[in-house]
Image (cartoon, rainbow, N blue to C red; front, side, top):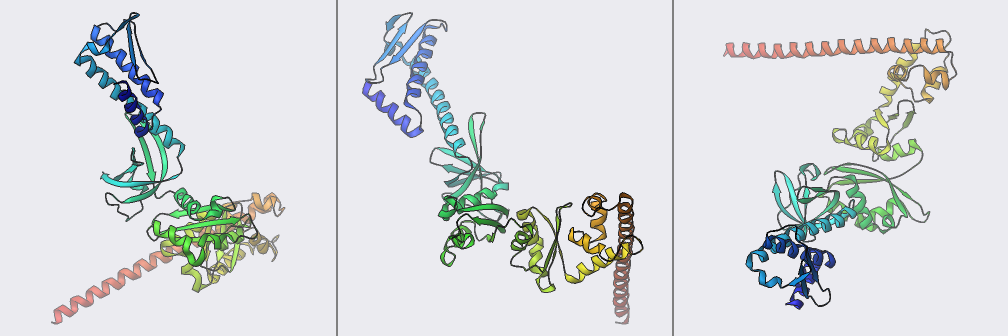
Length: 415
């Protein structure tokens, strides 16, 4: 019996990943609780000791040794229930301690059932993880029994269980995949400086090599694309653009907008805005499907990016120049100075206000106010003209629809 007890403790400790000493202490506490309940007095002094080496059980009631086996079936059931509760509590503590240390890591699991859209995943055959709908890749369906990789996003204790929140949409999931597939990333030779993701569709990632002999983009792509292909396959075909990081914002923005090629980039630090000029044939590439390329590039670089064609850019500059032509103190080179500050339109000038004009261009406060007022007036005129044109377009469309309707009615009468 004593040796059997030791084997049981050993098995529980191994299967549940619980410290053996904790199990012994739980057994002793459960037996003490059952003994007090048997004698109907919660205040009596009961001491239980299990020899860790032999498994022998010694029970003392009010310092007198008793044989716990003589207490009968009901105390045994009580001890069993208390023991189950304590082992479950120890198991929860063990699971929490284990997984809270692994927060932010990738874990392999087995897909199970869906509960109101949340996927339940079995982890390490000892815990359940929960992947909410928002953390699942759009369009991806996991069937019961399938192996699945996911990121441990959060671990918290909730009522009687440990809540392990999993994700496949978080940007860190991409980072961890690169660490697994690209040794140079795991070793710190290549650093992922920035990452922007729209899960299930496209990811942009900016990388930097700390070793001149290692090409950051080439290492991440792998021979014939072997490394990046493994990551793309894991993500169900999600597109991944790998670009070189640069401390130069202009170079970084240019890289981030690839495959589109930028002709010119103007940075307005006051607004955190980059105006990028691209040729007509590059416009759709730069913007991307549903604006995805420019949106991800903006998140990757931290700049608000406006895409303009040369015609649109020149129109903005002409309006800016026109708004200032009646101010005597402003010469022909002033617009060039504004462009150097990344101010390319009357709206930009109205938004930045007088401060950069005074600080950067060393203008008089009164002149700066006059310049901004002129830009604001031109902006109002442009807004009014735009509204008028939109109204005319709507009226023209309605008139065209009315003519088509009348034409159809005439045709029906003729028949």
